[in-house]
View 1: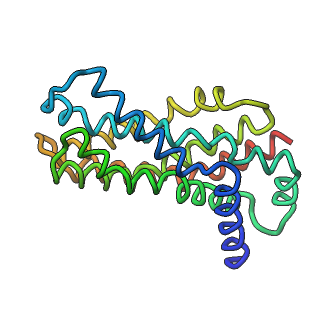
View 2 (view 1 turned 120 degrees about the vertical axis):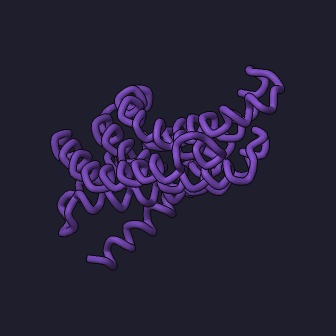
Length: 222
C-alpha cells in the first residue's frame, strides 16, 4: 500500500507541475498582494510591521485557493477519479495524498517565500521566524479544508468561486491563530506557544477529519 501511495503522490506532483504551475502562480500572487497593500495603507513602516503577519497570512490563504478547484476536477473529467474509487486503496488515503501533494506544490513555496516578502513589510527577525513557522504548520490545514470544498464542487464547471465561498468561513480559525502566533513571535502580551499549539491542533484535526468528509462528498457526487 505504501508503494501505491508513493506512486500516487509522485503522479500528483508531476500533474500539478505540468497542468498549471500552481507553485509559481501562487508565489506571484503572493508577491502581488504583499506589494499592493503598502500602496493602499501608506509608507508607515511601524504600521506595516504591525499588520505584516496578517497581510502575509491573508495573501497565503488566497494563494492556496488558486489551484484547489483542480484538485479533483481533472481526475473527474478524464475518468481517473472513478478508477481511484474502485482501486484497493481507501479513498480517504487517496484524498490525503492528493492534499499533501497540493500542499507541497502550492503551499510550500509560499512558506519559503514568506521571509523574503516579510522584509518588504519591515518585519524583524523574530517576526519573520514566527510567520514562517506558523505558515509551515498552518497551511496544511488550509489544503485539507480546501479539499472538502473541491470535492463538493467537483462536478461543477467553473466552480472555483463557489468553492471559495464554501471554504473561506472554515479557514477563519486557522487564519486567526496563524496571525496570532506570527504576531506573538514579534512581541506581544500572548506567548508564542499558545496560539502556535492551537494552530498545530487545528492542522492535526483537519488532517484527521477532512479526508473522510471529502471522500464522502466524492462518493455522494457520483
